[in-house]
Length: 471
Ligand code: ADP
Ligand code: F6P
Image (cartoon, rainbow, N blue to C red; front, side, top):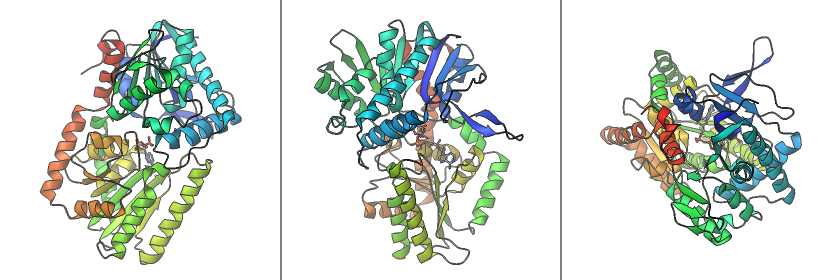
């Protein structure tokens, strides 16, 4: 086993499988920000990325991805059902998102969650050279820092939670709450998207584990000190802005607008088809705007991109049926021949097509009921290089803490949501430009490279890894 001085441990590997021309399966780099951002370090630091390919069965041997060694962790069909679909996405996911859907508790799921976490910890142990840095990502792997520290006290361990971390009143519902907290506290640094999440975590460490905690540090009974804090994740703004300015993307945007009937305004929403994203509320608000005569279908078109996600989980299947019924209802009631009210696109797109869609959007509606960050909001801002475009943004997305110049809205308040859409539709272009300028200036300063630099500086106390980061 080749060992590395930096090991990233995430549920998913930074690759997608693709079917090659000859029908064979081939792997290509997925367009995730994290692996791009790690690039400056990767060129100087032997790195291993541990993750799952997304398919069940034995783990394949994977080729290196540039300088990153890929180590695939296998998941059986049962583990997929009980760890990924079960404890991660039917227990933790709804609970961490304000319990907007009822979390499901099954004792067996936690056992499988632990079993899969142990496998990831074993893999990290095998791949980490003495004194290495191991960086564990997200709610699927909350036990890994603790399991790894037991095996390897020599490692520097970071943990970053990409999703919200809930208030104590919700978290204490979890039957295995103490183990989950202790798992995260195996790290030296636990990072969250927002200050409030770090505060929730500190309160829980005190309440459930009796630790001494502030919003910056937690001291455990055995003397282990864990630093905590907010490190809002970001995107590669420069890369996306460059893509959006490419002539072929501009041409594609013109074509899309034309295909939409050259309307005066396009409202765009881009989400995973997830009940946290507020898709139903948004569709309802738009249909009420049409019904109330505030917008005319030929004049203001809505495009809803909803990429399928976690499709075997019951709550996601139910959501898909409901969303599709609502789209059908709206189109049945308000469309004319060749002029649908809602253009509903239920499939993945490549980055260039997404960038073209963002360029077409006069109004971008990002209105989740709860979201750790919401990178779509940041991607939209990155593509608006001419300072046009109004962002309607939920107060409950992590991005709202950074984009206070967006048209902020409470997506549970339907009248408020309609009001925010109308304000964005009718806004003075000078006001729109001023807001977009401010958001772009913030994003340029706080891109994925800045995020990586802040997190690793805090984890690494300014030594080896950080020396490789360009700023
Ligand atoms: P989440 O992590 O909950 O999915 P984010 O908004 O943070 O939400 O991230 C979603 C990511 O998925 C973004 O990078 C976005 O560009 C991408 N994405 C969303 N819809 C599609 C789609 N239809 N095709 C390809 N990528 C998509
Ligand atoms: O942002 C939370 C998250 O679970 C990520 O970890 C993940 O990449 C994304 O949502 C998509 O979900 P999934 O990996 O379940 O398809």
